[in-house]
Figure: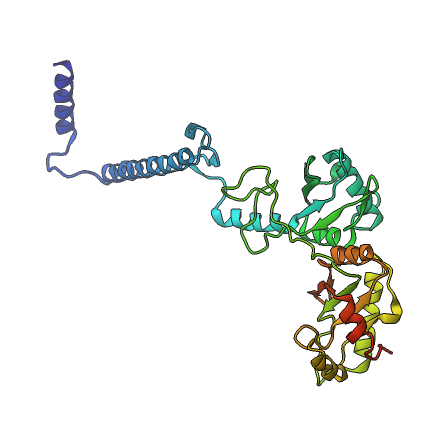
Length: 329
């Protein structure tokens, strides 16, 4: 009863306050429009927050009341980052991230970080006086399986580490440094867990080719053009291949060969034309260990702006059909 009398008194006051002609002033109309806008804004905001809460609950996230990923701009709660910015940041992180393999047993993340920074100074990736504390490196190691991931400060730094430090020694172990094999898919979060994957599982890494002989065939070392390729191009290519590969294994230089146009008929006769093309280089190593090391170390290196393919070639076919070809000179 009390509430209904109060409402009645309120209605009477409203009627008394209204002008006799029933029209409202401009200020009253403006205030009414402001109230309506505020009601619509609050209703829309409640709907948005409810939608965000439902998303968080469905993903097993934090309590929606924490408004994770939101901030108060002085007027309303809004997302802290747009999805576009998130995608761009994820793409950058993917390019800054490298896989590290053959990590020594017992090597901690801190020890690996110290070793990496020291090697980066020696190879002039960072200035020699750069303090370790200022380095923003994220490192995650799987102690049992001897692999991990490192995220560098920039894409440029990651490229330099990949090019210069693959095979660096940590506690006497040559550590593999490669690109995670996720270039064609969305970037993963550290430590490399794909959506729906089990945490701690490694990303798919490009496996090195299997070494089955002492002979390594390097496909398309020279991109042959019948109109522009000259004799010196063959010589330069062989020298580059020998120089690069000899850093990781001992080569029998006398049997080094590069396929030229005049060799094609002999290859056809030997039924090798489908597997051996102009510009392919053949290197004979003194041991399978040398050949295997070269294939592992060189597979992710670029030559003339492209990746080359390193694979084993049967020794019997090499001696029977490749060695008799004219050597580069």
